[in-house]
Structures are given as structure tokens and as C-alpha cells.
Image: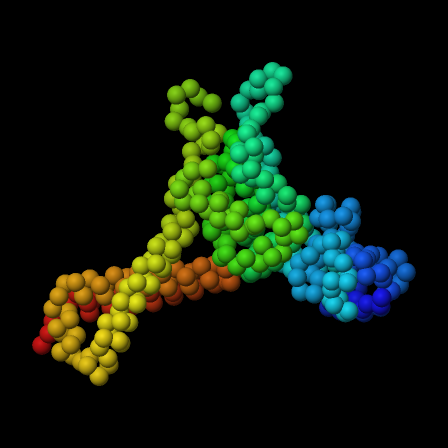
Length: 233
Length: 131
């Protein structure tokens, strides 16, 4: 089947303003949008720039705005999209080239919430830190995050205020705050209690719609807020 | 970790965060929102359904304000509504106005206007004397 791609192009070294690149590609209905982008890059216009690594919805590299919604290009089948597909870079970041944005501010916030297990208690020799299935299930949902930034760049609070820590970092913090093996929950809650922390969330719910992993992001944020209000993890 | 220190195991050496302006503001918005819903509904039923603008005149207000209850009711509504509204506008400013100087300016104007209206309203509620 033939489809049309309308891709927002921008090369800051050459272009004064973004422009729309229009391409027609022949694809199979079961092809993904990523395949269509490859078709353009490999056969029509090699200057098109976009990120992708695993191409199977796990690495989170190819999040972009597809027909106005944040999606992974490798998870969208062209048959489920329109005949003319509009592709734009994620909002709220500096565009480096075409669909590639500068994610450094995003990862800076991610690092701020200590996204690793903190436990200084001495380990028993030859024994792992165990937890029950119930303890594990408290943060099961937020372990699924692949840091694609689809949620954060769908968030109006983030668009207007780039200092806001953003839903993705709160999801990552949630994953460790509610981990029974972790000991830095209060530390992370201190960070999220700051003025650009979790209280900037206005429960717009764009993040829930955007997450390609189906994480209930607003629920995770609400649980962090509740932990702060009731001073209990 | 020091022995005997009052640190919870869960928090791993640091006490749980307490307070913070944004946290209290967030709780206040939820509680005052619920309270205002009932206060405003009660106000609407009393002033616009059971009574109407044709009945409400100076004597009506004077009779109503003879009772401490209605003065308290109106003051509560004024106080909560002003704080709720001003705080809502404050968060919008914090979202939208990123320039620190401009944010300070707008917030100063907002707080001043809010305080003036609160004081004026309170003055009427507390000092009203029928002539």
C-alpha cells in the first residue's frame, strides 16, 4: 500500500526554520512506521535523521509525535494510522536534527532522583535481598518504564515549565521509593517535594495516554503525592 | 547508621519529608475546594432559590447579619474562596511565567490585590452595623 509521510525537518546548521518534508512510500500494511521511515532514509533521502536502536519497543529511542500523539515509531503499524502520516519530534526539547532532540535535560532530571537501589545495610553472606510477591507488586508497574520521554513531552506542565521534574522521573522515583529493599525513599521524596517536583503535576492525564508501555503514570504520581501527604511509604 | 537514632528503617537514615509550601498548598486546595462546593451551593440555594434578588434588600441583609452564624458563613466563604483563587492563579503563574523578575512582579500584584479584597470583604462582614 502507498502512504504519504509528512515529516517535520530541521537542520539547525542549514535551515532558518523547520519545514515539512513530504514523501510517498510503498509499504506493507503490517509494516511499522519505523519501516516507512527507513524506506525514506535508505531509498529516498539519506539526510533524514531519527533515532532507533532495538526497533522492538524496548529501548525507547524512537519516541516521536505521530499524528499529534507521542508514540514509538517501532510499535505503530501503518495500517492503523492514516494514509498521510504526520511525524514530528517530541515537544519541549531542543531539536538537534529532524526527529532527534536533545534529551540531556531529561536524563539530568532522571539522575536527580537517584535511579538506583540504595541500601547500605550489610548483606548476609551468600543471601540475596529477598522480598515477597506482594512487596514486589507495589512497584511492578513502574519497572516497565523505558525512558522514551513520551510521557514527559506530552505533559503541558512540562511544556510551559521545563524545570518541572516531569512524569518519567516521578515514575522512576516511584520504582525505587516503593521497593522494600531500598533505603533512600525519603531522600527521593525530599527531592520530589521541592517546588519543581511532584506538585507541578496538574493531573492532566496526557502521560497515561502517551506511555507506550501502558504504565498508569497518574496513579504512580498520586502514590508519591500520597506518600508525601501521609508521611508514609 | 547511629544506634538509637530516631530514624525509620524505611527512610534509610533520613526522616520523611514534612511540610513544604507546595505540599500544604496542594492539601489546602483539595480541602478548601470541597468546603467551597458546599458553602457556595448553600449560598446559592439561600440567596437565589429560596429568596430572590427582588426580596433581597438592605433590610434583608441587616436582618441576616444580626446573626453571628451568617457573618461567619460569609467570612468563611470569602476567606476560602480568596485563598483558593489566589493560590490557583499563583500556580498558573508559576507554570507559565518563567522569568524570575516577571514572576515576582505578577505574584506581587496578585497577592496585593488578593489581600486588599480579603481585607475589604472582612471589614464589611465584621463591622457592618444596621442604620
